Length: 342
Image (cartoon, rainbow, N blue to C red; front, side):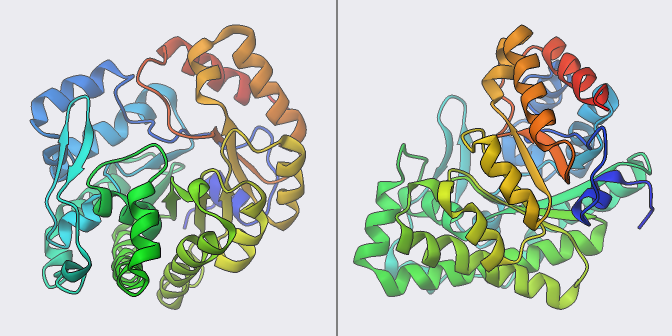
């Protein structure tokens, strides 16, 4: 791998000033060029599975802002879709699936899994040839718990109660579902790495709704299994875990899963984040609404993070994805603030 991809240096434990910078959901609806490409694509899944258009939208924020990393444009729900489940996205409602039953879990079909995902792998291959040489390419998947919550409820909910109840009432079936998802997600990440991804990230957007025992069983163990399987094939690949809302579990999550970098949501106190840096790189954790607000709210948030965390391994990012109403001028201001840090 080229030595000029600075995000890789940070993931190896190096502190850089200014730190590398990218944003979760950086290819998205806040950009007018994305909205135009999305219109041409038809459906959201058509955009995910069209390498020409997926490459186009992945490159848009790199061309506009010069971020240090580019993340593959796709969605965490392509994994259940590739396993034969129906997945659709409706404007204003988000993802919709037919809820899976306990008896249907054993019938999940992985026979054509990689064939179904070949357009995604083609997108990664093309991105690596089109991105600037210094830009780190990030592949990703959803963590088994988070993906399972959508498969069980059929949509997102405020506290993912349907999945939690399912796990309590059908424990054997639920653990089987997590295993299927962990195995196929690991295989999916391995293929992304082989196609050219420098780093992979595992998104566990709903880890914060679980109690201590469930967090260990449903978040930590499946992600640890993904990390184990990926490292068995690619032992040196950096892996970022993002267990949003993990709170007091963040440190044990990294230790038990073996992830290289730790993505932090915006509720993590900077004193805690600084402690977590002792074990390796952290990523985050600006409140996305500070970016929407701009002005002093934005500059104060950026300054606080850089002052607290900038002297140790840090990847500057938001504490979750950028929101559609974010003004482009505020993103430009954030980039200038981070890049001016010394």
